[in-house]
Image 1 (cartoon, helix red, strand yellow):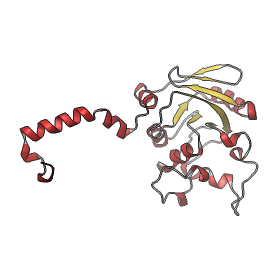
Image 2 (cartoon, helix red, strand yellow):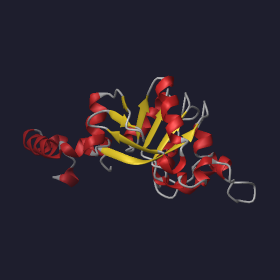
Image 3 (cartoon, helix red, strand yellow):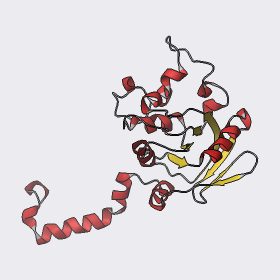
Image 4 (tube, one colour):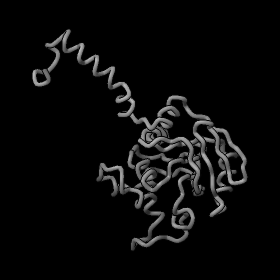
Length: 207
């Protein structure tokens, strides 16, 4: 998983509440288990018309939001089904941080496991960032995970809270597999010792 330390980029405003995972990535795109290639289908029904053409009024179809790396959204973002494809699609599009007043629990957890930083802020702070994000080409925001700060285009700073363990994982690019591999040497030593002390527990094929 790619490390998340500091991110500076265009913030796209999505002032909608209860954006569910089917809106983020519709069910017809869940056939793949690949984490790449889903970005083009992010917010599919809002981005494209029935013929597959772009809807010019949708925020991610406008310059400069086509290159947004931060999304500012309304409360209860990521509700609905537990599909992990939702953070996959967000990340594949290029968005690495989603800021909202609240998130659905499963979506929130899945974001951390896939290198996306979800930030919960009071509605008043989200409103400020939403206003910043509506400035188009000037909607540049910096998210500093180490300092737990967000800086808007005018230099104003907003602090955010995050679980220390999740912060550690993002800063070091550790997903569930990465966390296990950190202990690879210790695990290997245990397995070697167990094979010597209790060989009957080791399958014959591995002896």
